[in-house]
Image (cartoon, rainbow, N blue to C red; front, side):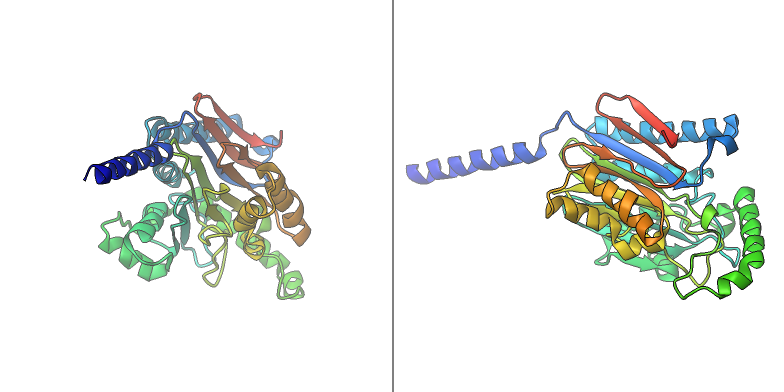
Length: 344
């Protein structure tokens, strides 16, 4: 009996040590965000609009930082940040999403837990106010990873998520953008029809604006979240990389959390986010080297462009892009926020 008690005591001590090593709060936590990449030039940005973007990115960082500082999870932080960006009409996600060729707003989002590799996403939804919350609900309340269209909307409704009239997503700026895109496409129609089946999507210069967040929390866990209105003037129910796990969104505690923004077709072909993780896990590459290889070399070599944000398991960050600019920012445990828009 005495021997059994000693054995049980030793087991209890080992379990306590295990819980402490995996559950104790660390002093290291990081949040990185983006609001899209593309042709973003200072010469074309008014001081008022630049301030609006800068203020929005700072507010997003503040919201996520507060969660991480108080011991909240990376999952909670990235969801709250992306929800805020979805509600801000400056960005191509949620309120203020771009319009399809039919004049609709079709929204995509994904979220991933680096600790468990659990993931959820929705695509082509039109009435869910916050698609990122729908994506998390798919992850946590269903056996599935991805839901699309009316089915995803029915699921969100049954789960009690906020449903809105499609007119909620309308903004005049995005509507005018659709009209410009249609006019450009009309002028280019003859040239476009002569190209191959892998021709460039219409309105290449005006389609970016995905939002995303990646975080490392005080428990050492990673998470990634991405949300988008897709490509302006898109047709045929086109879906990009944002809701596709491994293409535009990925998180793995062994490597990094990654959220992408850019020309989705190429991110899908490159399985870009997962490839970065694999390069780190199996190729033993550093985060900066892996992300630069994919975004600065492989992506443009294939004909695409864009950027990504990432944080690795040690708290290192990367924000490479191969466009004229990318709305981006980060904050670490010291609380100092950094926000950038243009090429440095």
